[in-house]
Length: 480
Image 1 (cartoon, helix red, strand yellow):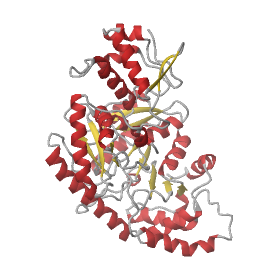
Image 2 (cartoon, rainbow, N blue to C red):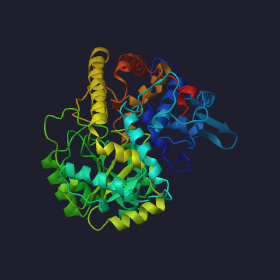
Image 3 (cartoon, one colour):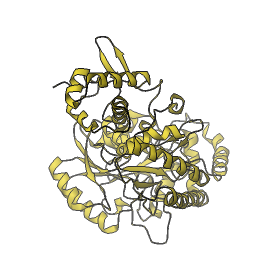
Image 4 (cartoon, rainbow, N blue to C red):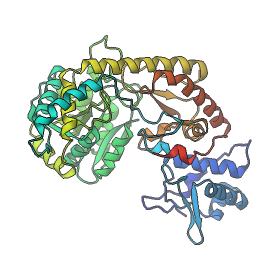
């Protein structure tokens, strides 16, 4: 059987049978070209993959070679493929850039409204935090400036932050990193051998999947519906013989779910019995939008084997590249050794800013939470008016709404959205197996005053997605 040839893998041509049936209200070649673009957006076709020959695909789909030829020509003309005599048709991207659904990071987008990344602007209170740090900076200039495991002043503040949440911690347990993702990478390289498996929630934070791949780990997905089912995790751990589990128990990204005390106890027991090391991402832990009910204690209060990861990117500003790992007893030296192989630590100035923030986080945090609440309310009102068939959750906290679409068309929506000045990410980008095509993440970090216009554009794009009229992203809208 002919395969897609790719430097990063291959897929059987039979997978393309999922392209059928084609839309009836457009020419067959146009419907096929659109469907192929959808496979690229969903991640089923990677850049550099070689498409099947026209003859092979025509036989597989029961279409004429003329239809296949015109569809491939359409992809080439719009920048989604290239064709060379003797080399076949190869998947490309329009222009010189990557598709928005692959980035999940903010960037200059011209007039487009970017819904692909849950990252907000710096709160007004950030200025005072930075000014205080700048006052301290001259006192640091008589050193070399390298603190590969974190400055003492910052590690003490982070330890105090854990203690304030009910988890006694000493500064020597804390390793400071250039962001949470750097901390996750260091932990994965510490606890994993190449080829070992990692249990993850599905959906989950997409960049964590990349970090696992970077550590040569293998992902095992466990569905996350309304909560964490300990029996399912136990079965997955036994079946896969996983070495670690990556979890976001506090306002999970992207669902916003909060793991209960009972769920933590049950799941921690299951992982301990299976010998699975918990890697706990607490980056959203402070983003409680209700705050009436007490939050559960940090995971490590239940399981002292856990590595706990955090950062300031969501509670302060993404431009402050400071994260940390709280290590279980006896693991700090091993993590430090691995972290030193990956980087030389966070910048001295960023660490001063982090210390300044952690001395009195409440003013800035209150501002951030107020923004998120306002945008959550705006999304609920606008979606109820313009897209009433979409099921919208009401998360207690976190950075996003995890929307359920009435049809599995999030890839088509991503393609159509650009024609309406929107950048969105299909739900399958939050999974390892490219499922959840009926889901969409909407960020609460978008300014609330932008939500009405964003919703109107979403509604128009959704109609195009339903009728197969989704357009091709413009190269200028794809620029980072």
